[in-house]
Each structure stands twice: as structure tokens, then as C-alpha cells.
Amino acid sequence: MPNVYSPESSARKLGNSQTRNKTMNIDNYYFDNDDIMVNKIKLRTQLGVPIDTEVSKNFDLGINEYLKKFKDVATNPKNIRIPYNNRWMKIEKPDTSKPLTKAMSIILLALISDFTVMMNAGLPHFWGYNFDKNDLIMTVSLDHAMYFHHNHTSTTDQSSSKINFDITDWILFELEAPITKNGRGYLTGRFFEKSSGNLIASISQEVLFRSQPSKQKDTQDTDSIDMSSTIAKNLLFDKPFPTFNIPSSKHNTKPKL
Image (cartoon, rainbow, N blue to C red; front, top):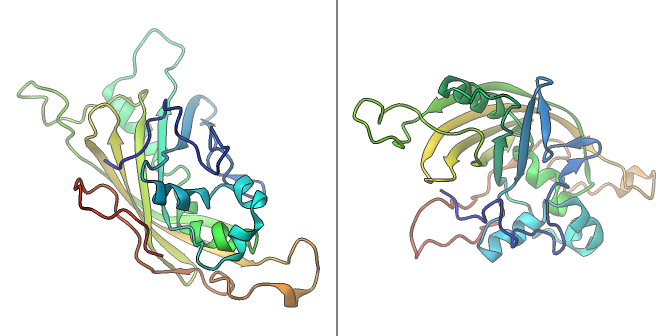
């Protein structure tokens, strides 16, 4: 399980002043908000802030207000936001005396497994150095696969191999995009149970991006567009990114940009 602050921790801050970390958006498209799914189900979500300070600094590059405040951050080509993210997610307990069944927990986890996934492939292209340099025209998932694993939370012989987790408790969703190229992104993700740290399920997804370089806010001169932005013609990010869930004191978690 990635080494991140718990959702209840008072230390989980990004961008110097952000406490709730719900300011990741492209124009009117927000992808780090709580939501009401299928008009009934309340989903709570917040970023899983890395404890490692160097990695946390890179996560700062995904906070809109931080980038707006420190303009020099978005002008340094070294400030690429790596295509890696962690997010705490849980379903609010329904207003009913009946608890959610295990089957419903599995169904709800499958439902949220496609929530806020696609834009993780766009992190290097819409935040950090490329902040405000590209317009998102459209994006859609092309395929989505999910794999459930045994999390061994039960001690009985027969049920120890069954999937058993509480969707109304915090679950950490770790996402990475190894490559985004030629208008398509590939993502993999993992769900971890907060109470045990066990791996619950994994996902893989391919997404389609349509985008274009944006005009600068203060001018209509198309020559001012920074064409060094890698998204200008093709989404492209195939640099190495860190893996955080290897439990080793010698493991180097600094992002390699």
C-alpha cells in the first residue's frame, strides 16, 4: 500500500495552504470532488497525499490554486506533473437500517473504479509546466477491466478466500499512466483497504483524448502558444515514474522526471 497520509490526518496538505485538496480541474471539469452517483449514492473522495516530501512537492503541481499563485512553477520545463496519483474514496453509509451486503460493496467498488480515472493520464499535460497551455476537447474510456483479489480479512476456513471489505470505510485508489501517446492513454490502478492495507482489486483502462493547444489568457496571438507543450499535437508521456508501494527502507521514492 502506498505511503500516504490518512484521510483524517491534519498534516495532509498540498500547495502550501490546501487542506481539502479539491481544486483539480480543467475549466469546468472537476475530477476531485465528492459526487452523487446514479442520483442516490454519495461518494466521498480526497487526494492521498504522499508522506515523502519530494513526491508531495510533485503532487503540488496538480493543485490549480497553487499553480495560479506561483506563476514561475508553470514556466519551468522541469516541473512536469508525473502521471501518478492516489485518492481516498468511500461510499457514505445509506440512510437505512440495513447494512450494505458484500455483493453491493463489490458492485459499488466496480462503479467507482471508473470515476476520475481518465484524467490521471493527462496530469503531465494539463498541470505543472503545461498548466493552462492546453484545452481538453473531449475524453472517453475505450475499455475498462477490473480484477478482484482475495484480501484475507476473514479468519474462517471457508470465507478466508472470499472478497470481504467495507465500501463505507476509506479505500485508497492508486493510479498510474505508464504511457499516453497519439491521443490515447493507458492506465493501471489498485484499490487498498485502509484498515489492513490489503490489495482488494486492480483495474486497467485505455482512454481516448482529444485536445488542442490553448491561446494564452492575455492575448489572441496564436504565435504565443507554447508549442513545447507535449500535448500540442499528440499526448505523449513515456518517461519513467516512481512506484511507491514497494515496502523497502532503501527504496528511492523521488520522482524521476
